[in-house]
Image 1 (cartoon, helix red, strand yellow):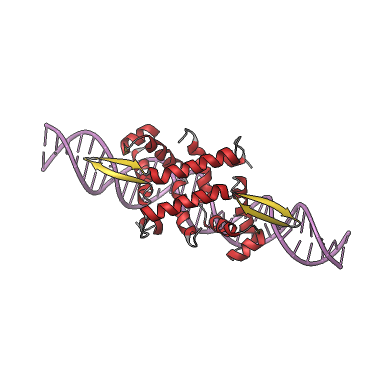
Image 2 (cartoon, each protein chain N blue to C red; image 1 turned 60 degrees about the horizontal axis):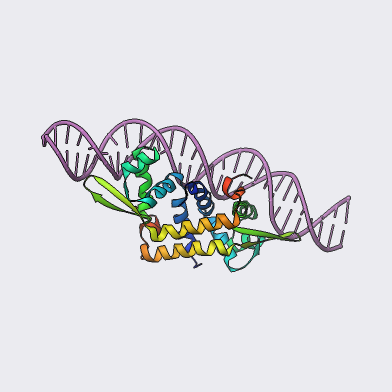
Length: 106
Length: 106
DNA sequence: ACTTCATATGAAGTATTACTCATATAAACT
DNA sequence: AGTTTATATGAGTAATACTTCATATGAAGT
């Protein structure tokens, strides 16, 4: 790990450490979607989704393409896929039956 | 991404989204260290380091081995290395000259 | 057993962050 | 131009998480 990467990592992880943003990414994993579609799929308010899309966009975890009044967001598979894969691997190997790591129990 | 992984991911990312914990991991990347050694290296209080080691341990990002009164922590390279590598790759390809993503500017 | 050294724990205050609601912008259609 | 639809923005409040300081535990040496 290069020196100074700590700062960068903090921004990355803070960005991803949010249930709404993670659920949004989970949706975008399947296909590009507009703000309204994401909101409907998650049962959340439009403004909440819009707010949460901004940090994801700022870090290029997603990209935007405006189609008329609809704004269609796509996931950056190149970045997101390997990270989620690494987490799945960790969960399997180091937290096989759930436990503290996954449930939050002490 | 498997359904339900959102919850797991949230715990993972929240755990890592903290400068003290990231700096601690950065230290442990080089070699196993005791609490006091980490605190000294980072110029932080012992209690702060100890507090922050607990969540890292609970998620098995690090492991502990007690040597007398010293508690020596080691990093889980299998999990941490690929994640940091993915972030470095993202930073290079999608945030080449810093920018919003890295600096936090709007 | 007492002292020292190393680490962990608890509680309280502070700071951060997220969500909600109201409103603004912006495009398409009449 | 006005209306509707889609998205974005702003401000205030609520919820969470972090740090600090004081104290507790626990091992090792005298």
